[in-house]
Each structure stands twice: as structure tokens, then as C-alpha cells.
Image 1 (cartoon, rainbow, N blue to C red):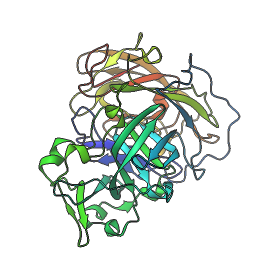
Image 2 (image 1 turned 180 degrees about the vertical axis):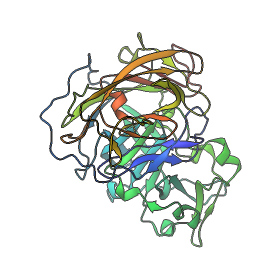
Image 3 (image 1 turned 120 degrees about the horizontal axis):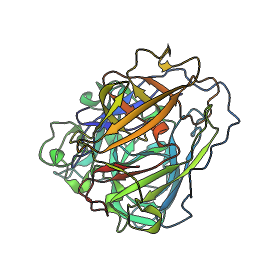
Length: 410
């Protein structure tokens, strides 16, 4: 999906994020959010417990604990959460929990309602010095808010004065949403059962060089007393993948999640490890590398058909076309768990075979590895793909022991 930014959310909130936006520096497709799966909240919590998948990294300066639970309002589903520390530059700090890990977008996005009053973050500036704001457009709506600067700490790694997107900012300068943004549909910021999104994908910025030279995408705005207008923004003020700004461990991440049994699990644990091949806890080992094409995709062979494939922890289901599996509403719902075999393939010809199971959803808790839904002409490998695996995501042009990114490895 050309220049689409993937950000994921909860089925119970009726969202699967797929955003129309940049992809600064290229390498990763960005894909947005469409309201689907309405009314698919689990009926009861399962008693199943997630199972181990090998050694879990111990506490370290490059490890963020991950939890998959029901979110801040109890409706989240298949959403991997971490806690980040956000500070006024050089000043007061606050821990912000329940921030979704999204391996297919770039930058930290926080709901204004999640920030305590003590965090008065200064605004970032457009090229002409106006207060910067951002509109992120999704298939089902948009998010709107300021771009501000914050010191951000991920595990033991600190980043000074990083641009972050503050969604639904209550500052009067950002109160009126430009028509070029609101025309995208519903304002989605308050529908997210999370306090924010941590984009740690393959791109360095969420837009990149195109927003430095042109305001045409209408992604960034300059705001003042007379309102907001599309504006160019220097790279230093664009919402940026925080991993790229780290002093160390800055070439990518590894997302590790426990395996989830059929029937789902009430909670799942894991870790987001910063860096690839930069420490003993993030070595590639025998992982197989799949580098995407320029649009951020590989291909998958499913039931004899070759289709584009995207990999995205921020989406909460497996999406693919299938005319044989029965559907209940927006989901596949086979009478019995159904196993399928697929083969992922990179443009360079590297292949990885894998199997997955699809089942109906009467008793899922916060996590399920077997949820799937129809999607036309392409496939999306959301969080179920990550359960029971260590998945590496290398940033575009960043050097790793296996060569420069971008690539996935698992």
C-alpha cells in the first residue's frame, strides 16, 4: 500500500490501524487505520496460559518489558504495550504506560490525556518558525495534534529533545482541525485503548525529505493565532523513530513475545530489545533475513497464490484473502481450528516457510494467535505472527552484522 503507515489497535475498539502517510527515508510501507471488527469483544477470559519460547532477556539497559493485556479501558486486544519515560527537556519526568509497540511506523505518539499537567512540553517548529502540528490520516479517520519536544527514555537509553506527536492537544492554537485533515473521517485519538504508539519500524522519520521541501502531503502544519496551514518541516522537527536517535543500539529492534496456545490467553509477556547485534541479548543467530522492496513488502504464497505481505506488530490480526474459510461478521470462523501453510519470500529470493492456525473467537482474552480476517489482494501479518518468535526489524541504511537494513529477520 503505497506510502501507507501501519499502526495497530484493538479489535474491541473496532480499529485496525493503517495510515496514509510518509515513510521518511523509505524502506517501510506506512499503513493506517480502518474501523473493522466492530463488536468482537471476547465473551470470557480463557484459563490458558502463554507458553515459553526460549530464554527471555533479563533486565538490561536496552530491554523494555512488553505486556499484552486489555489496555487502559479494558477493550484492547492483541496490543503489545511498553512503558516509556517522557520528560520536559532537562526537567520533570513521567512514566507513560500502555504505549503500543508498532514495528511498521516511525515515532512516538502520545495522547494528550496521558500526559500529566506537569509535563509542559515545548513545541517543535516548522521551517518558518511556526508551532508545528501534524495530521495523520487513516483509512477510517485521522489523528490531529501538536509536535512537541521531549526527553524520552527507553529502558536505560535516553534521547534529548526528541520531536513527539501529541494527539488531541488541548492548546488553543491546535483546537481547530484543518478541513484537509478532518475530511479524512473520524478523529481516532480517543478511540485508541492505549496512551500512545511507539513506532520502531524501518523508517527514520514518519515523512522524511518530501516534507522538508513540500507542504503538499498536508501531513505537517504551522499553527498560530490565525489558525493552521500546511507547512514544510525540517527533519530535526519531524516525528522520528526514537531508535535512530539512541547513542547505542540504534540500528533496529527485536520484539520477543511468548507463544499463545489455541483459545487465547489472558495476558502475554515479552520484551522489546533495542539494537541488532549490539549486545549479547540481540544477536541474530540463525534468524533468516527477509529484506522488503521499496514499498515495504515481501510476498507470500498462500494456497498456491502469490500475494504482497506486510509484517506489523501494530495490527492485531492476520489478514488475507480466502474464499473457502467461513466468515462470521468481519472474521473468519471455521467450525474447527484450521491449519494453513505459507511461504514468505523476499524480492532477493530468500524464503521462510511457516504454518498458522485459524479458529473462531468465543473465549479469547487479551491475546490470540489464531485470529484472522479477510483482506483483498494482499496479506497483513499482525501481532499473531509475532507470538512465540523473536522478530528483528532493521532500520533503513543502518549497519548490522548481517548488512544494512531494512530487513526483517526471524
